[in-house]
Length: 113
Image 1: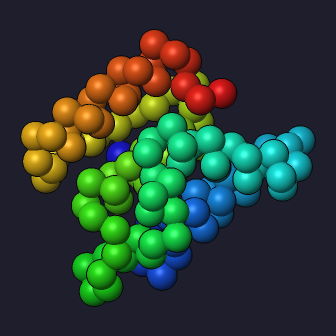
Image 2 (image 1 turned 135 degrees about the horizontal axis):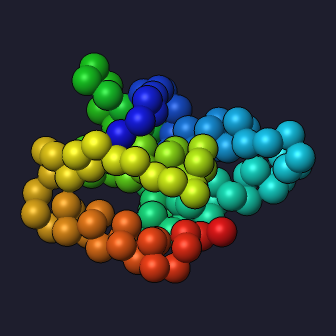
């Protein structure tokens, strides 16, 4: 999934806001924050927004939630084209199905923007 980097000490909200800051300078900081909020809502991450992402050495959100955060980063960076490399690998069938369904829904709806 692209080259998304998740910093284990940042929360989900901080991670997506940090990514949103890379959006064009024509958008104000509140507009960028609003886009990060939209992505969190669309991907079902509001419940874990204040949880640290964690990593190999630090406990944080689940592996499935980490995948959602990575997908959210990709949506924020360039939502006109989304390339995902094995977005369901390592996930159980329920979470994998939810990811595939959500990506299909985003495609049909044109994303949260």
